[in-house]
Amino acid sequence: MTHTHLAAGVFISVVSAVLYNVGFVLEKHALGEMESVHARRLVHLLGSVLSSPVWLIGFTSMLVGLALQVVALSLVPISVVQPIFVSGIVVLLVLSHVALKERLGGREWAAVALVALALLAISLSLDASSDQAGTSGAFGALVAAGVPTMAVACWFFLTADRVRDGGRSGHVRAPLFGLASGLMYGVASLATKAVSAIVEKRGVWESIPHVLASPYLYALVATSALGLLLFQTALQRCPASVVVPVSNVVSSVYVVAVGTAIFGEHLPTADWKLAMRVLGFAAVFASVLLLANSRSGAPEPEMPLVEEPVLLPTPSEASEAVPSPSAE
Image (cartoon, rainbow, N blue to C red; front, side, top):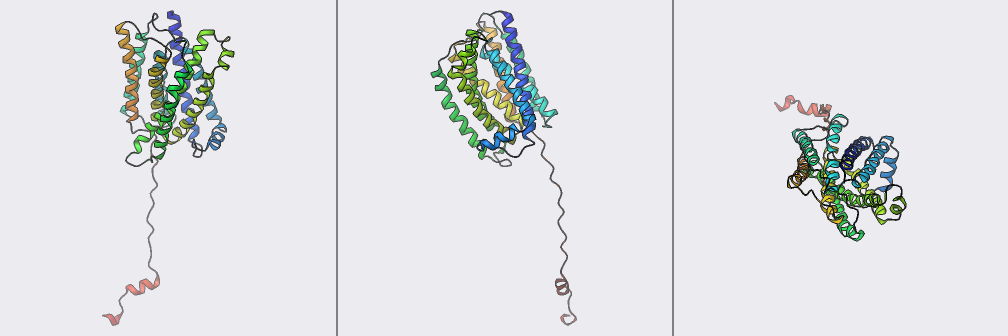
């Protein structure tokens, strides 16, 4: 692989991450203006989001980001694309602070610093001799990995849905929702990688009929749709500055760990470059741990002060309270 391909893959990954997270923020803003939606009420959820122009713009931005991710995965390995893709949490955190008025504390800014470190480490780890995008992967292996993962994702979602804000376990609700959607999107990312492998092998235009005939495309559509239902429910109920980073990092950790094996990709051969790749991945993972343990989010609305009404005694009660002359 040439350095030009590497540079193009990295650049497209960055643009993909920015568009994807801008889409998240727009969707979160739109959901804040809607009535309560839930994955169990599919028709109501779809009717609500599809009637919102802001949500549709955000969704389009996310789709473009995903399309660019397919292109990036056809140029560079998963272990390069996914950490960069997750680095879009920097865009998310800044926009959440500015546009959604979600408070950012020390943990969030520390996460931003870790993401910057991760991007630097990954850029130093690039190796033209070993960073080849995988072009083969068995559909059976994807099914064997994906089906149990989807079951676990649904379990996390149902568990999070039973947790109520304000209780002792309320602070784990957002991370659980993030885990659920992240695992579901992780399976979708495996299918995305499989589609990108077809594009890499046959070229963009010649691959279209092969992609349409491939089971990977329909696995991608199904898992992305399920992830969308879980994620929209989570995004309306919890701070975007927690749910989105957890979802993104869990998805990326999953697809790097599983996808690298399924598609036969290799890590850098030089020891110091391998160390930089591992450092970048670890820094991204540490950033999500910080965000998962964060209590920050949208500011709580101030409760209006309600004055207790002054109860005046009735005439009969007032006469009883005055002692009569005979009682003295």
